[in-house]
Length: 263
Image 1 (spheres, one colour):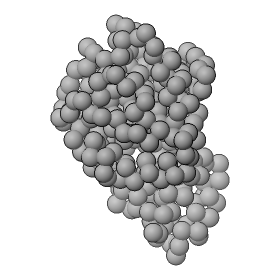
Image 2 (cartoon, helix red, strand yellow):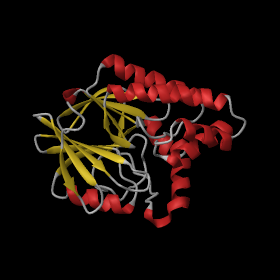
Image 3 (spheres, rainbow, N blue to C red):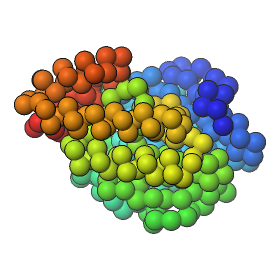
Image 4 (cartoon, helix red, strand yellow):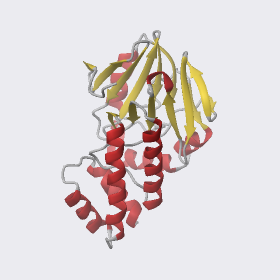
């Protein structure tokens, strides 16, 4: 599957890119919100399963409108637990550690930061989890998923389209990297994706990507560690990263990464 082969549908806010795999379609919603989030809808035989939630009121309203009248079997909530006004009556699925991440862990800390930064435009209400997922295979809405628990939440394999959902990739933008250990974990995860040979890697902060993009991100993460080791503070770190990657987007994520590396 070519990551650039899709049909585009404009919404009141953002745009949906539809990838047709035959029996299964993938609707990738670009929210065009301040965090440039991405939400994925997997469709099979007229039923939808959503991966992640939009968190800003404008994108929530737009995607609720897109799904109005459609059969939504459930929402998988991994790293983005906020935005409970999105599909409030649909079943919500998460692993126990992902639910904890959103309620009290690192996810809740980020939700609080975003609420302070963006005010009422950000829906900080946390989705109530109605179904707790275990590691391994599960079927929702007639679609087979494989749940892979991570330190914070979980990743999702979608075997029918040879794709995997994980939190961040973004081959030409910055990501939130919580120190050298987190960078190593991200590298290991991306190397696993390459070894498995997925057609698409889906992430909640970028459009669908492929294995060449994963290789580019591994190189970036390795360089990030080298730069951090040579810097004395966050300001010099950010300046050095910008010099090395002048065209990269996601400046707010670079700010967060500097905070993690330098406190």
